[in-house]
Length: 197
Ligand code: GRF
Image (cartoon, rainbow, N blue to C red):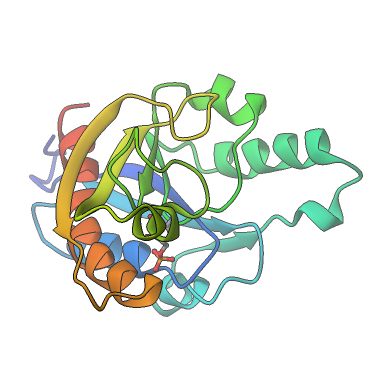
């Protein structure tokens, strides 16, 4: 949507991470394109994740909301939802966020939270999707971008991409190849969802 100066008004996106933030980095790189319909306006982590560096390098506000700093899980859920809501995002992206989100976030942003998962859902949900697929002996795995609901990786599937499993794969080598297709897939979904809003 162009503003009065003809510039594109970008929709605000908040990204939640726990890890190295390669998916976050891909979102930030894509956001440098002139026609990108979104801007990452904050990055929030549940720990001092190394991926926060990508946001700091780009001058984007970061926040760490640790479970251990709260009396219980419910208090943390509320603090997380409040931290996200401060930035009034159009879309919330879980990019390697290794905690289930609670009712406060789901109630505030229901239908506007997406998650990326390193397996072809509904197979291999949960925290060890790559390892579980490898252990099962599948020949094709991949990644899924889903709409987040109250279940564990049960939400509506928005996009998927397949990755072949090689004979010599370890969890690490397979996860690296999955991440290589996961990053553009996530960028594509986030672009699509923010462009259509
Ligand atoms: C991604 O593969 C994501 O699907 C999974 O953990 C990984 C996070 O990677 N839940 P990164 O932190 O974005 O590099």
